[in-house]
Amino acid sequence: MIENGFCPCSNFGGLNEFQDSGFIGRQSELAVLTVALDHALSGRGQRVMLAGEPGIGKTRLAQELSNRAESMGARVLWGRCYEEQGVPSYWPWARAIRSHVRNSDPEQLISEIGAGAADIAGLVPDVKERLPDVGPPSQMESPEQAQFRIFDSITTYLKTASQNQPLVSARVRHSN
Ligand SMILES: Nc1ncnc2c1ncn2[C@@H]1O[C@H](COP(=O)(O)OP(=O)(O)O)[C@@H](O)[C@H]1O
Ligand SMILES: [Mg+2]
Image (tube, rainbow, N blue to C red):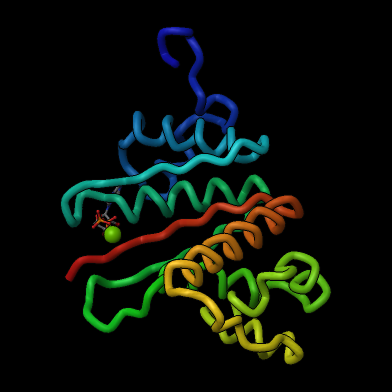
């Protein structure tokens, strides 16, 4: 990127805004994330993993990206979880989806969630509250098939929703 003389942050008015919010440094990481955001906003979804020691600044960096994404019209879905026993399967995904469900009116929810409503209602009870006619998910399959179907339902839902508004999903794992 830099070799081509292109600074990906220039689209967004430079880094002063990050510094104004008390955010310090991390310019190369922000540049990578900003390019990924730019791609996502133009319809090419990206996945970026932030890895490092506890306290090194992963969550704060994700928050800076989240602020930027929201200012550019995206909806950010946060899914946080702690590394503890007893955390249900898919919990970070469930929390991220729940925030979108709660921000959707019933018409939008029906049109976006489609045939995956029963699967997603099993993870996010808010779906059932909003759409009381949704039945239970099918039980006539192996655990592997059920897992595959849940993944497919989540993917389809988020993909459809992102056609109405760009989505950034931030899943944060906190260690104790
Ligand atoms: N780039 C930064 N500028 C200012 N403060 C930061 C920065 N990165 C991290 N911090 C602060 O350091 C602390 C630990 O950062 P955090 O993002 O929670 O770490 P991690 O998620 O990697 O465990 C937080 O109080 C956070 O606000
Ligand atoms: Mg963190």
